[in-house]
Image 1: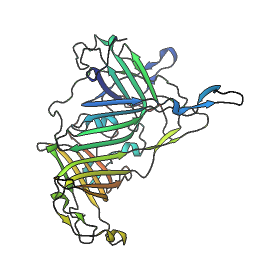
Image 2: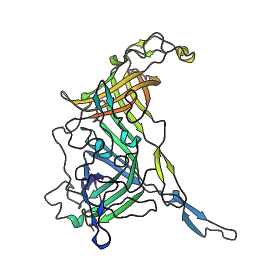
Image 3: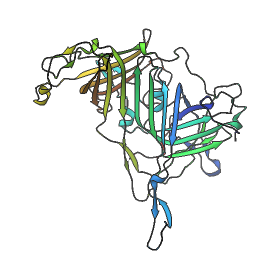
Image 4: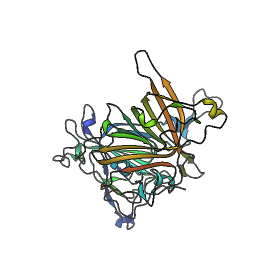
Length: 408
């Protein structure tokens, strides 16, 4: 156990693994498969919360002023939030998102394809947070193993992503923020190797199927430190979706707007299905429809003709557009998001004294099936990534890996 007076960010490193993997043998001859955690890079925020009271109910009866006891009736679901600077999409693939691909004139694979089909490998993750010795960088590989007795680890089991967002702004480093919901938290002290799987089965038990090692963390690929706001471009396939005479009007040609900020929001709320006879939820399934939003804030230049009454009378037409948000390093595309068949939900105009007038535009599209190519959110990371794409596992994970918690 480490002796510290405080814990600071320089002592931290974050990893992910699948939720379960095979063991061989039985009884005294059982052999646990050991895998290495896959490190997330450029992480700059982390927080988690355990609401114990939310799952607890007081038991009271006549004749007693205070409760006679408490009982937990529902699953306790810790929440975990983390954020990181965008680079090449490696973190997204490690977290279970899908790399979309182009071919035959269209796209294949929604960004959340693995979660849409409840893929046993991609739909949930274990998250590991390592804390190193005070006064030492966690990334100091020269002393990493020698100081294992001073390392503490927190393991989050059965983590589902509940929301994902990517944000871009003038003068700001592009970043992503992820919210996850777990089923278990385990604390270890004095080690970073041979950590038992924190995932739970339906009875709320850890079956200890598999061990995890957390290798020495590093800064990852330094050929691209971070992405920059001047590397970001926002394009619209239907550039005049707001300016046509039959539309509601407002902001004119979208490509002519000086964009100040943009963000992509992917909500992945889940329906919890419980069953008599089980401690944990029988399944946590995605709630549909899933509305992806892309928000753009820009400076106004010119107004387009139109009127709100066209929308009220239904004569505005069915105006849709594909929106591409691409971040490049020179001529190389590092990460790209494409929202297909998006519709305008909101236009908001504002101006203050001596300020430029701004317009805030919110577009939305609904996620289709995992293989739908004409609507939804598509994700294109750097094609040179070493992290496996959809249907595979981070480096070191056996091909026979399976989840511990069934998904329906």
